Amino acid sequence: MPRAAPTTDPSASDGGGLLVVAPDARRRSARTTPWGRVLVGVVLVALLGGAAVATVGTLVSQRTAERFAVEDATEDTAAVARSVVEPALLDAIADHDPAERAAAADELARAVRGVTTASAAVRVKLWAPDGTVLWSDEPRLIGQRFALSEEDLEALETDRSDAEVSDLTEPENRYERGQGRLLEAYQAVHTPSGAPLLLEVYYPYDAVLASAASLWSAFATLASGTVAVAVALLLPVVLWLLLRLRAGQRERERLLVRALDAETAERRRLAADLHDGPVQDIAGLALSLGAAARTTTGPGSAVLDESATTLRAAVSTLRSSMSAIQPPVPDRAGLVAALDDATARGRAAGVRTVVTVPATIDASPAALLATVRFVRESVANTVRHAGASTVEVVVRRSLEDLVVVVVDDGVGFDADTVLSTRRSGHLGTTLLRQIAEDAGGALRLRTTPDTGTRWELSIPAGGSTW
Image (cartoon, rainbow, N blue to C red; front, side):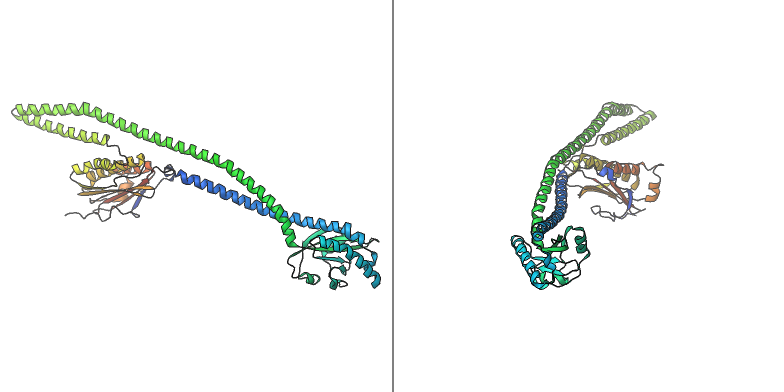
């Protein structure tokens, strides 16, 4: 009964099947690295890292600059209190006599008017300890009483300066609404008799931000310049390290090629020794026995002829072994010839072989050699065990991998049984596994009795990318 043709397209990826060998990430990481992308990535990371550091430094410097600007406003208010307000302050500012209080207020207004004209202050208030506004450049506030905050009371008691963002929702600040965000700085002052009063000066917060911006600009320039210098010094070092790594990888590749060349040379020497020694001797002996059989009569002639036939078969076997020992060396442009030789045993056994491989393929010498070894051993297994009439071989590049598929229409086998007896026989499957493991690849198998066999090997192509 003829067997069915393979049911799986060898050109399609077999995501299913039994995973015989899992890919080894440690070996796969040794493939050729795209150094150009690595260098670009390092540069981008350095620039992004530098930008992040500069941004964080700039934000911190902005916060610091704002704090310094607030401190400057506080110090300015303290200076106004000591040099302008206190010298113009009279005890009558808190007197019950309207005339005396008005005269004291006029004296204070003349002194403060020069300060508000020369500075960015938008409001000045003078408070009594009970929360009464004794004087302000906003007349509607004079005489009104509001609750002082804990910070105001503490400033009166400790004679300290401080500043904070104004809460314009408070009733005492209702006349400042509409002027934008304000900063209020307060400082305790004293009348000639020593009575403590609280001076509040309101500044536009934009002025604080403008002052902070100048400081922030200086900090930002320093931070950006420092990061730029650091990146400029780092890039040559990174480039030098990448070049050293690239040189080391190329040296490893050269050593691999030399090792392959040495293996090829040794195979050629062994093949030459077989050809010039045992093969020639046995072939000569076969010729001699054949000649002797033709000149001999009787039963001895048949014996000699049979011996000559056996020796000629031995010569043929030795020559096949020589071909296996010394296969064509695969390269990017010669993989077709190497695979043609690797499948010769199948054709010699009467098995129809179909090989599909690109004319040129970008892969490393190690990947090409592993491909030839895998195809040769797979076809040999087919000839020995499968009883197949057709074997198909497909080689293709898939992203960063070289994929090799070998499909036959033979008798198939029970994969679990065969793979579980690795140590007790089935050398062919063991060799296929070793090829996949040595190359750091993945090996998949799909087979069942009477349905043929499909092997799929995926190995790092290696390629030559920069």
